[in-house]
Length: 78
Length: 218
Image 1 (cartoon, helix red, strand yellow):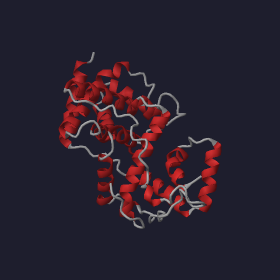
Image 2 (tube, rainbow over the protein chains, first blue to last red):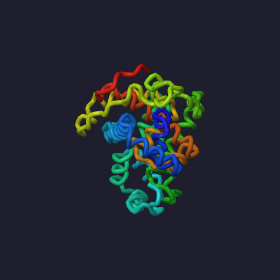
Image 3 (spheres, one colour):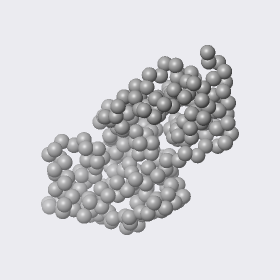
Image 4 (cartoon, helix red, strand yellow):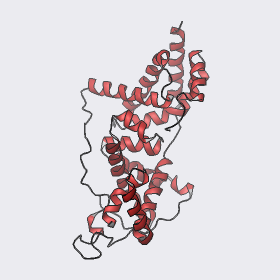
């Protein structure tokens, strides 16, 4: 397992999608390679930071427009 | 998430309230999902007003579909499915082509080849010549800093559409791989390849900000 190959398998590794043999090969490589260990950790951090982009704000006008749509819809029921 | 019971209990309660005409239940749902839908809509178009319209149409289609929604998927998945149908129909109508970019750039490496020793070098071939240094452990505030967010947003905006969609759904909205495959009509393998390309590029864009690593040319 070379470093160059490992970095292309990182996502499959993190997704648990690798055959046991490849997974073991990566685990073994990581034990002795600081560069790849750092790389793997960077990918984990990238995923974590990207997750922080989740936002829940909504412009009041858009909210009001949608609530009005709901009232329209409700008035058409039954 | 996989392995959950088919009908989410929270969803079931919300559905009962919605069908009963409870406006507050709808307002809660909007607060929960609108921003996520908008982010996804923006992967289809760079026109902010159009993206907003797509999401408005999605909510209306959602209300109209309430009668036949059986709760086999979560409300969230259902909403995203509607959005995709709305977006595809609408963008086709406006004769925009949604690029059917497949997993095309398979050959693009996650890290510039120059950072590795040449493959033929005995013993060290294919190993790092410029290994990455660990990033500082990020406090939450820094991860949320506007410059960090802007860097990620910019990197994601550069991604091909499908890569961006997979990364939005997986890493921002928290969908499971299986749900993303269903929503986007992708095989397991393609979903993973797209996610890998997307995450690798975002990592590369973040690296110069996180210390230790030289900036990489785009």
